[in-house]
Image 1 (cartoon, rainbow, N blue to C red):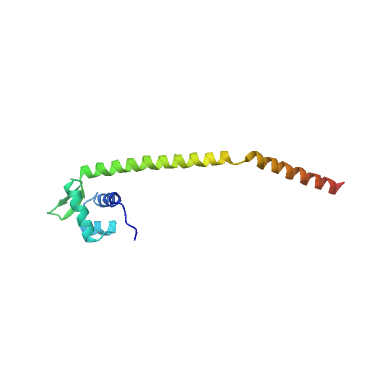
Image 2 (spheres, rainbow, N blue to C red):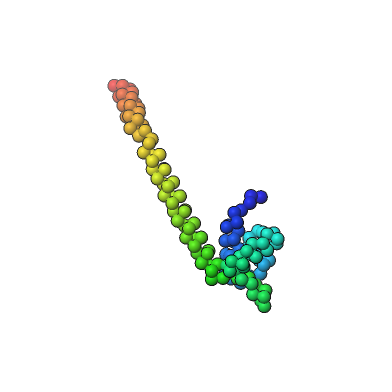
Length: 123
């Protein structure tokens, strides 16, 4: 199985815990082993991105965690926009570099040739 970047895992955990939920549900939603999830949750709790309600035994993304998610979403959006515009620019440049005049000249030549053949056929 391909390993995922830590940031992607952190985002998945915080997204899963936006509404109060159990550790088991987060584990299933993020496709992490218990030991992996525990490691990440300790880090997130130490950074005040995730909190645990001992009375209810539920995890919840903190306000700071939600701000983190919003920031990463904005960054991903700006990167995707740049990638898309770069791709469009490359496609446009590729279109410009294609030899359109040659294609048109060949087409005219073929049209002229086919016209003269048909003309001689009818004459």
